[in-house]
Image 1 (tube, rainbow, N blue to C red):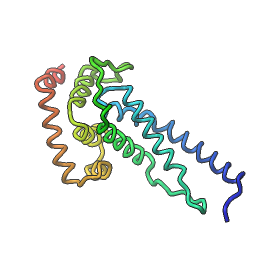
Image 2: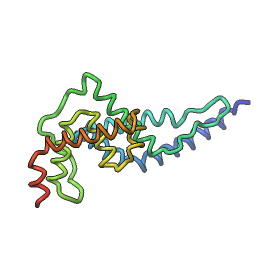
Image 3: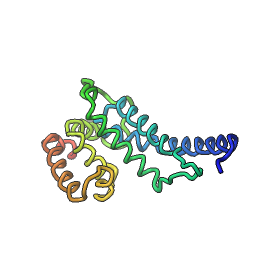
Image 4: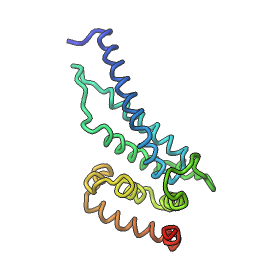
Length: 184
């Protein structure tokens, strides 16, 4: 038997409240990851997070005819997976080739060495989207090889190989500048 309109509306309101609480709790971590994936482009990062939340919201409300919700076992992990997929699909669009010149992050750098942070973000921006995604997931977010492989629809062996090669590429981009920044 299908629920009446009032019961459906009440359930929908609870789900909206649940999603709003989830989005408020995950917005900052997703934005941080998006900034890294976007190579420091804060405007693109905001767009990526917004699109990711839109896709998550669409799944959040999926119900069957009997009113049972398909469960997302790990919503935070799912959100990061969606964010990375949104980023990778965005890089395939023609409009993604537009890049601002001499872009400076909008906010102040958090604790730590801001010059080192900016150098790393700039180096990440010079890598391919796939290399960037692997490095951000593995080393910035400290995810396991298996988690990274699942997010990127890849095998653990491929993630290990790509991590090794991407680290080599970022070292080449950073060159001796990293040693100078690290010595300070």
